[in-house]
Amino acid sequence: MFNFFKKKENNDTKQQGGFLKNILSKTANSLVENVLNSVKSETINELELEDIESTLIRADLGVDLSVEIAQKIKEQKIKSSELKNFLKNEFANILDLEKPQELKYDKDKINVYFVVGVNGAGKTTLIGKLANKFKKEGNKVLLVAGDTFRAAAEEQLEVWSKRAQVDILREDKADSASLAYRALDKAKAENYSVVIIDSAGRLQNKFNLIEELKKIKNVINKKLENNNLETILVLDGTQGQNGLNQAMVFNEAVDITSIAITKLDGSSKGGIIFSIAKNLKIPTKLIGIGEGIEDIAQFNKYDFVNALFE
Ligand SMILES: Nc1nc2c(ncn2[C@@H]2O[C@H](COP(=O)(O)OP(=O)(O)O)[C@@H](O)[C@H]2O)c(=O)[nH]1
Ligand SMILES: [Mg+2]
Image (cartoon, rainbow, N blue to C red):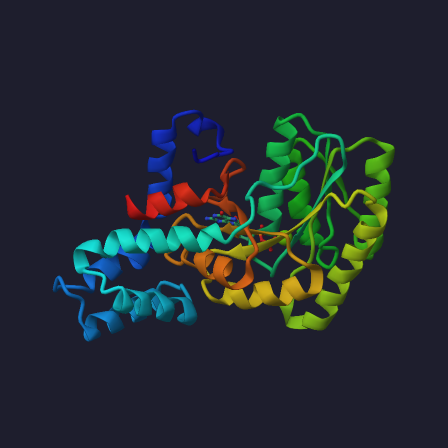
């Protein structure tokens, strides 16, 4: 079942599937429809194979994966009429490389979520949505305005904290690592069960950014004996293959444990999920499907693939 956090979609699996199908329709079109439409004859010929390959690349599956899939179609002599099922299996298998997809959470511990990604990817929005979800599930939630560079960024997180009715720790121009340090002290002293840390994302100054994120990560590791940390990389789902390069940069710096792909509503580049699974072996655990507080879903590979192929 597609485990939507979305409240209004409660319980009706069929409706949820339909909902996801709508959200993913542009990706389904670029990734599945266009590929199926590029074959005319029952026996797939060389030209058609090339078309399949370039269509997959255009759908942001990445060159390696696209070449590999086209190669398999050739070797296994897949017929046009078998192509849809073949692709569905291939896509499902790629995601099978992934580890479990639920966000780490232990009700007896302080759960820390460190959220990283470039400016505009959707970090602060995702944090608002997560805060709302955790709060509704009965947690005491603390948001940490770790994007201390811009007052506007803190302001924005504060708006989300009010919407979700959770607490926030912010301090203009503070050093983000010391802010994280104080946040974890506060969480221990005041029994918070969930701490979500926002961060800066100015990739123009990559070296400084990476150093800053490493510092925050070190603070968390030092303060959090139980290691109940989830480091979430937020990727803009409309950006396609760019996301993969960003993922590598951030992963080297702070060991990403899960990925959230935002803005899948309306994006035709959702195929990036497969590319990430294949290349990075980091599970996608969350998807952002709109700008509202409830527009977040747990990523479920079966429902995702089904929605693309329905
Ligand atoms: N359509 C859509 N827009 C989103 C989603 N997530 C974030 N956004 C928008 O993307 C923009 C940047 O988001 P923000 O959270 O400020 O990104 P940050 O710079 O990484 O913190 C904002 O206008 C958000 O409303 C999503 O899932 N769907
Ligand atoms: Mg932000």
